[in-house]
Image 1 (cartoon, rainbow, N blue to C red):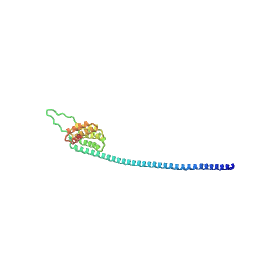
Image 2 (image 1 turned 30 degrees about the vertical axis):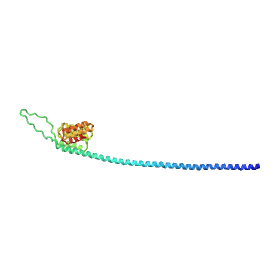
Image 3 (image 1 turned 90 degrees about the vertical axis):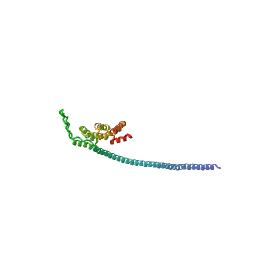
Image 4 (image 1 turned 60 degrees about the vertical axis):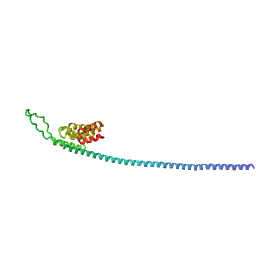
Length: 263
């Protein structure tokens, strides 16, 4: 083969090789671009799925939280209603108890001896000249009754501090009045309603100590036991209840005391 022909053939081969290389180099970016687009689409799809899953989770959590909040609101409303009902029932019970006490006081007062409006003169002894007794200030039963009723009305109106002060003032001002045992009894009840059991016990014990035959004495002793129980003095309360049963066995308070002693 002539040299010129060989040179021509080598030239054509080189040109074809170069063309093939260029084609290969040109198609590589295209394939890479196609590959990159598919990968991006796949990643976007995965990201979209994950995002939707997270949104679903958040939405479910928000719905559940909203349901819990509504449940708490409903429960709060129900409890508020119960508190209002219990408060009303407590106030009603307290009012009924006070009315009962006042009614009981009226019935017991009918059993109490009334004060004499004037003192009887003592006959002089034949062998000795009469000795003049110390004069006492004449009492006014009507005025005492009004003062006592005023204190009782304060208790009835649930003005407990004012009632306690009024009963205490009455007892101090009228130590010999037929109404003084009742004043001490109601003084004890007022202190008990004010949650001062120690003062309540002191007032009720005055009734039992000074006027043991008074119709209020058994109830006063029962109230002492109640206060001792609230002060966690179980032994003292038991002893008071036993004393009540022994001293006033036929009283209504004794019946209650027996029931408590059985518990």
